[in-house]
Amino acid sequence: MGENKNIVLALVLSAIILFGYQYFIAGPRIDAQRQYDAQLAEQARLEEESGAPQAEADDAPSLPLAVSVDGGNAQSSGGSVNTYANAGSVSVENSELTGSISLGGARIDNLFLSNHSVELDSEEKVQLLVPANEENGYFVRFGWTAVDTSIAADDLPKATTIWASNDTSLTPTSPATLRWANISGVEFFIKIELDEQFMFTVTQTVNNTTGNPIRVRPYGFIDRKQEPTTDGLFVLHEGPIGVFDDTLEEKSYENLRDADNTKFESTTSTGGWMGITDKYWMTVLIPDQQKQLAVANLSYKNNSANGGYRASYLEQAATVPANGSFETRTQLYAGAKIVGTIDDYQAQYDIKLFDRSIDWGWLYFLTKPFFAGIHFLFGLTGNFGIAILLFTVAVKLVLFPLANKSYVSMSHMKDAQPKMKAMQERYKDDRQKLQQEMMAFYKKEKINPLAGCLPIVIQMPIFFALYKVLYVTIEMRHQPFFGWIQDLSVADPVTPLNLFGLLPFDPPAVIAIGIWPVLMGITMWLQQKLNPQTNMDPTQQKIMSFLPIIFTFIMARFSAGLVIYWTWNQTLSIAQQWYIMRKESARRAAKKAEAKS
Image 1 (cartoon, rainbow, N blue to C red):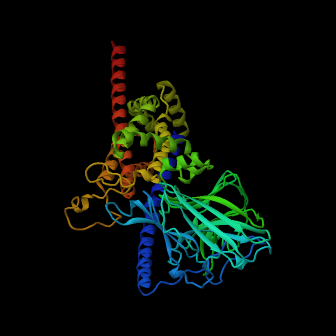
Image 2 (image 1 turned 45 degrees about the vertical axis):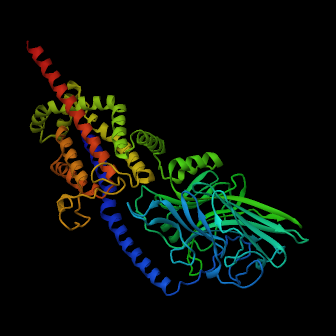
Image 3 (image 1 turned 60 degrees about the vertical axis):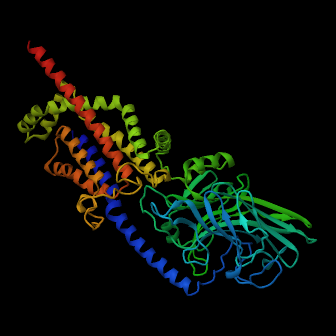
């Protein structure tokens, strides 16, 4: 019995810690960060109106023999001096993306997601990449570093180089090619192609028209100047991410920053990928999967000129023969983390572990099949909420035999409550004797005291896996259910505290409890009432009795989709448990009546 109590208490405390962290720590921190970000945005807007600062030069990944590409005058293909501000750009547009590529530094640095709004029913689109000269700059750049003295650093394009292009737009049917030539006659080309979704193909070409061979290393990197606002939950990774030599590596912003990684540490990898991921969006570089990279890393640089977070690669040295050329190709994924799209790209380009860019977690064997099941039902019903309800029923049917055995045992235990209480009263001063008598009683009545824990033990990983699916995947974002639930990915917006929106005020988030969390609390309380009373001390009983109230407040800030799932799941459990316990009570009563006759 004591083991039973410890298991239940451990599960309860684990759940309280999980949800309590979100409610009391992560939630207030996110609110504060959002207010701070709003102030920064307003400050940036005012600075822009008064004249935005020019972009600072960024640097390339470096090795001991690599030459810095910082500084220097910005040069066009004709050699004249230009400024970054008037460099010009190439527009970007397909069915999913709009934006531009800056000819200053050949940066992909202004990208919006055309089909994803910042808020439900808002016309403002999500901005993924931000120009380098803005305070929260977030951009991608490609280039070359020198290997030896066969070419000088000044003869390579720099962060401040102004590129030329005869193409004014990049679309799925019209690639854009950027060109720059040094005074020695070496030409550099960056050809950028875009498909109908989120994948760019970047081909870097060096055309050596001189009489001597040169050696260069191509590179690519993603820079993010500031740490964005994150949900702050341990169940979701947001930040630098990569796969190096078939191993997934996730670095939090905090860990990289605290490591003070001001020196670029070399890590080799064959193929793989690296980038920066948000909850619903990501930017990822995918080098040639067959190439051995000289450097592949996630890093942070803490200095005024080039500070920020970086995901980068540096290829092995390549020799460009006299009057010859050399090219290398890289994919760039910049867009929404749509499961089907990412899976398709993984198969199309043979990208190792690319599906892990979505944080399926260590319950991968449950979370991804769960998503497939829910998404299939969504395709049939057209309503994500209905899909969640149907999927819950399917899970219940799979677990029905096991739950049946558990509820039968619980029914036996509930019927045995009077005898157990009498036994506890008789041996209240001798706990050892009480335990012995209890074990003998369980054996005689064929009661399994651990059977009541079984549904909880099994349900916890299932609940957690489904929570991950509903929390990390973009497919539920801005999806309606019925009535007032117009977005299943956010908290229930209707609360009784303002008479369901009739009163003109918004209650504080701490006490703004929606209708669905209240229903969830009621179902949790009803399920407690159905369960037999265990041999708990008064303190444990008080904790258990307050759990429905505590969880009602905690779950009020979770997504409506998750709360609807839990409420519906508990409703089905109550119906199943009530039916089985009633059936078992009738059977046992009939058996006793038969024995008497």
